[in-house]
Image (cartoon, rainbow, N blue to C red; front, top):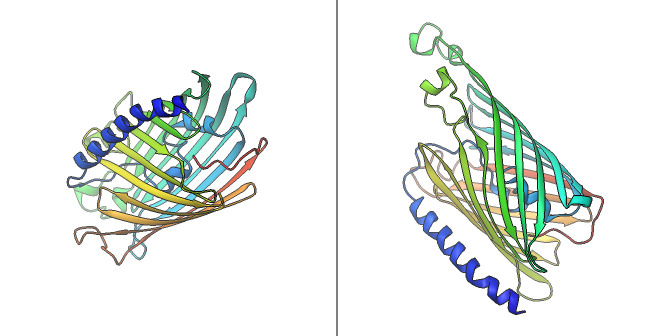
Length: 309
C-alpha cells in the first residue's frame, strides 16, 4: 500500500504537466495532426507500440473513422493493428496498417514493431518499443484543374519510417512518450507543398484506472500530439466502466471538438463507437457535420482479465 501512495506523487506531477500542455495547446488550430482518432484510450498501440505489453494476450484491433459526414472529400481513416506476445522474454511483436483519404490526398503507412518490458519492482514496469516501416503519400492535384499551372503536377512520395516508444506502468496507471513517425529525409516536391504528413510526430500519453465501487471503475486518459509547424493538439477523456463490460465515455480535444463514446467488452470481443462534433462556430461544419468512429477488437491466447487500462 505504501508503494501505491509513493507512486501518487509522480503521477500528480505528470498529469499537472499534461494539463499545462492542454492549456498551451488550446490556441487556434489551423491544421490537423496527420494521425488522429477518438478511441485512443482503448487502443494506444498505433501511437505508442510499447502499450501492447500492458495486455498479456494477443489481439487484433480495427477502426474506421468518417469525419464531417455529408461533406464531399471529407477525411476517411482505416486502421488495423495486431500483436503477438512473446512471454519468454516479456515482449511482443506486431504490425500496424494505417490508411487515410482526404479529398485528393491519400496516405498509407505500414509499420512492424517489437516491444520489450522490464520489471522495475513488484509494482511497476518499463516498456520500450521500436518500429520501422514505410509511408506513402499521393495528392492528385491534376484532377482539380489540369489547365491551371498551380494544379498541373501531382505529388507522390514514399519514404521509410522509424520510431520508438516508452511507457512506465503499474497495475493502475501508465505514462508514456513516443515518436512513432520520425522522418529522416525530406519529401522533395511534397515538402514544398508544406505537407504535414511526412513530419516527425511526438506523443505524450497517460491514463489512470480507479475503483469507484465494486461494479464501477473510472478511467481518465490523455494524449498530447505535436509535430513541427502544426499546432499542438491535446485530447482528454473520462470513461466509466460498469461491471467491466459497458463503457461510457466523453472526450474533449483542444481543436474545439467533443465526443461521446460507447464501448462493450463481451468475452474476447471489444466493440466501440464514438460520435464527435464541433463545439465552436469556427469549426468546419459546426454541430451539423459529425464524425463517426467504429472499432472492433478480438483478443486471443492468455485471457485472464478484461484489459481496461
